[in-house]
Structure formats: C-alpha cells, structure tokens
Length: 200
Image (cartoon, rainbow, N blue to C red; front, side):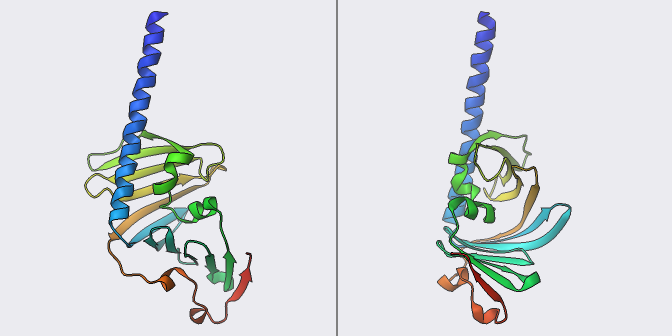
C-alpha cells in the first residue's frame, strides 16, 4: 500500500512539473509575440479536408484575419466579418470567447484560465504543448508547436467541442509592422456593394 501511495505521489508531482514546464513554454512564446510589436503572420488554414492560404495582422488585442473567402476586422470593441460569397458584412460586439474563436493566436492570452497544459513529444527544433479545455472553453483540445529558437508558433491544431479539427500552419512571421487604426476596421469604400447587417 505504501508503495502505491508513493508511486501516486511521484506521478502527481511529475504531472505538476510537466504542467509548469508547458506553461513556461507558452509564457515565453507569448512574451516573444508581445515584444515583436505589430506582426503579420502568413499561414495555411486546413479544415474538413480543405485548405487555403491566409494571414493575420495583430496589434495587441486588435486584428484583421483574412482567410480568402472571409475577412474579419476587430478594433478591440467592434467586429466586422465580410463574406465574399454573398457580399455581406456582419457587424457585432463580440464576447471574449467569440474573439478567441476568431483569432487563432488568442491562446497566447487565454490559455492560463481556460485550459490545462502539458508537454507533448516535440522535436529537436520544436516544443509541443497540449492544451485540454476546461468546461465552457472554446476548444476541447489545442495542440501548439513552437519553434525553440524563435519562440514563434509554427502549428496550432484546434479541436472543437463537437470534434471538428482546424489546423493552422505558420509560413512566415513579420515583426514591427506599421499599422493604423483603419487597418482593423471595415472600410465601406473598398466594398461599395456589400450588404451591411448590424447585429449590435
């Protein structure tokens, strides 16, 4: 019985250390992203057997996310989502969870509250961190690969509560970009015929 108790204690301690190490990896990646200033990340987006190229421009909590057929702007308060297929723009004031679902790099700020972290297998060049969502989290599971040298995410693989898997592979990472407030807001002049649907 004593051996069983000691074994369980050792296992719990090992898991605790592993969780701390995983969190530190994400902490370093988050710090690197914050210190990079305004960034632009080009990526390949894969979901339900299909793939497309896109990019995200980030300035703290603000972003513009271009996924080919859909473009989303968020200025920290208001979100505009343009759908090319029907030439329509939806305007909303999203919740924090809604923002997290739209911004694939939001894990760098919410992982401490909504997820438990552990280290995955990784490689010689990359860390792997596995985030398991707590009840109510936007994703059931998030697998993050991070370059050991740059601390930049190279792959984010997200599984929704219903089991849908979305993979985002980072192809390039540009630091210290110059953005203005208009970068993160929908400009009607660029889409003169778009139907505006205000959901606020």
